[in-house]
Amino acid sequence: MTMARSFYDKTINPQQKKVQTPSSLWAVCGLSVLVTLSACNTLPPQSKVQTPQYISDIHTSETSLAHVIQPLEEKNPNLTGYHILYDPLEALAARINLIEKSEKTLDLQYYIWDNDKIGSMALHAIIQAADRGVKVRLLMDDNNAKAMEGIYLALDQHVNIDVKLFNPYRFRKFRAMDLVLDLKRMNRRMHNKSFIADHQIALIGGRNMSNQYYNASDNYQFSDLDVMLVGSAVKDINQSFDDYWNHSYAYKVRDIINPQTHPLRYESLKQQLEDHYQDITVQNYLNLANRSHAFDEWLHNNIQFDWVKAEVIKDSPDKIKDKAKVEQHLNFQMVHHLDKPTSSVDLVSAYFVPEKEGSEKLQHLAESGVKVRILTNSYKANDVAIVHAFYAKYRKELLQSGVQLYEFLPAMDDLENDESTKEMSKQTKISLRGLSRSSLHAKMMALDDKQVFIGSFNFDPRSANLNTENGVILNSPSLAHAIHTTMDQQLNRYAYHLVLNAENKIQWIKKTGGTEKIYLTEPRMKWWKQAGLKIVSWLPLEGFM
Image (cartoon, rainbow, N blue to C red; front, top):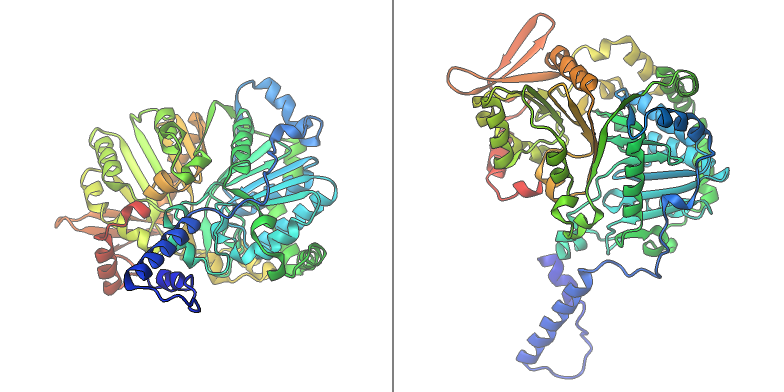
C-alpha cells in the first residue's frame, strides 16, 4: 500500500497554481488513483496488430524428420508413439539433436530459460539452426524473463527468430508495481513446456531450460522427466502452441522492451555463445550427454516408439484472463479422460497440495481398496518451502485412510561415491555435492495397469486454477505397469516412508541397505521452522499454492 500511494502521489502536479479546497483536492486525488489503477490493470498497448502465425504456414512434409516419422505414422494411424526421457543427459541430447536436425521450424514454449550452461548451449544450437534457414518461434512466460531481456531482444534481431513474452509485466524495471496494482493478472502464469521440431516430434513434461534440470547445477538437481511424442498427439501440441503464440497476451519482445536499456546486439550474442560452446567443460558435458544415448543411431537405425491411444490435455490461454470455459481447463479434461482406478494409483508431484476435495477423493479411493501411493518432496528437498506447509496439513488424514505417503530425499547417501557421478563432476567441473543433492520436479500419475499422465501440471491449486499447463494421457498398460514396478523397487531408496505410530503420530522411515532409521520429528527441520510453517498453514493462502 505504501508503494502504491507513493506512485499515485507523483501523479499530482506540485506546481499547479490554482488553490484547491479540501473537498476538490480529495476529488482530484481520487480521480487520479482511479485513472492510474485503470491504466495499470491493462497490458502494454500493442504497437500494431500482429499478423497471426500458424503451424500450417510452413510445410515440413519433405524434411528429414518427416521422412523418418511419417512411415511410422502410416503404420500406426490415429495413434501416438512415445519414448520416455528419464535420464537428464538423454533429455538434453534429444533437444540438442532435434535442434540440429530441424530443417524448417522450431517452436519452443517454456516457463524458464536461464542464461547458464544449458540455456546457452541450447541457444547456440538455435542460432545455428536459424542461420541455415530454420524459422524459430520462442514463446516465454515473462515471470522469469527479466535477466534474459537483453538476450531475447538480441535473438529477435535475427531474421529467422521471433521471440514473444507471454503475459508481460507493465513495469519492466519495478515489477513489484505490477504485483501491487495488477496482482490478479500477474499471479497467473504460463507454466507450459513444449518443444516441437519440424512439426514432427514434440517434447513435453516438467523440464525447463536451465542447469538444474539436466544435472548441470552446482547447487542441486531436479529429478524430472518428459516424453518424446510423434504421431497423433503432435498435431494437438502444434495447435496448442499456435493458440498461445497468437493470443492477445503474447507480445513481441521488441514491442515491450526498450532496446536502449540493453546494448547487447545479435552479433555480440552469437560470439559470446560460440565462446561458451567451445569451453572444454561444455564440450565434455555434451560428449557425456550424447554418450548416454546414441540419439542419431537410435533415430535413423533403431527407432523404437510404443504406439498407443493418447489424449493431449491443455489449458486454454484464456485461463490467464480468467475467461476460459470449464471444459478448456486441463484438470477438467484430466478427470474426463482418465478412467476411474480400481486397483492402484501412483501419483508423483513436486508440489502436492490436494485441498480438502482432493484429499477426500484420495481417502475414498484408499478406503475402497485402491492402493494409493503419493510421492512428493520432503521439506528439505522442496525448493518452495511454503508449499510444504499446505501439503503437511493433509498428511495425517491421508495416512489414516490408508493412503501411502513418500517424501523425496534431499540427497542420496551413496551418490557421491558413484563412479559415473565422479566422472561427470571431474569432466564438467560441476560440484559433486550439487550432483548428489536433489529436488523432485516430476509430474506424473499412473492408474491401474492402464493409463499414465505426464506433463507440467502439479497437483496443486495453482496448476488447477491459476497457471496454464499442458500434458498427455497415454493409454499404455506396459508403461503404467513399469511405473508401478519401479516405484515398488525404488521408493525406499529415494524417499522417506511416512507411517503413523501407535500414538497416531507421523514417523519418517529411511531405509539404507538393510538398515532402517526412524525419525520421530520431521527430518532436517528445526522446531522453529516447523512452528512457523504450521502458522503459515492457517493463513488463507492455500488457493495460491
